[in-house]
Length: 81
Image (cartoon, rainbow, N blue to C red; front, side):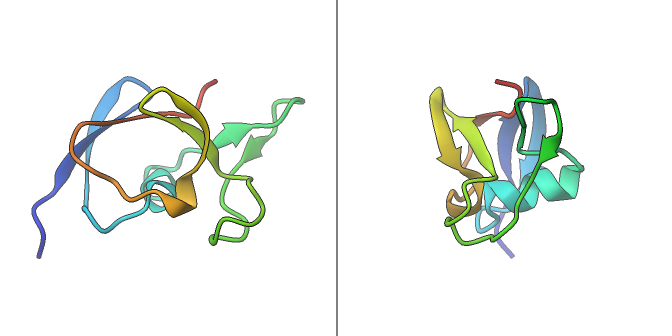
């Protein structure tokens, strides 16, 4: 089994498996990937990068699809804007 990596999600450190997608990590933590304009939580819908519902900011790069990004040590994930 791979050693866990540390990922910071909205300012808090957590552990993830290196083969885990950011979307899977967010689901495991019970966090929505983003909020709609009206404030509704948005999460994974298609899981393969088509719907764009799981967009997050990764290492300062906005609008990245969480379902396509693998967790890596030191990664910064923002779901709150």
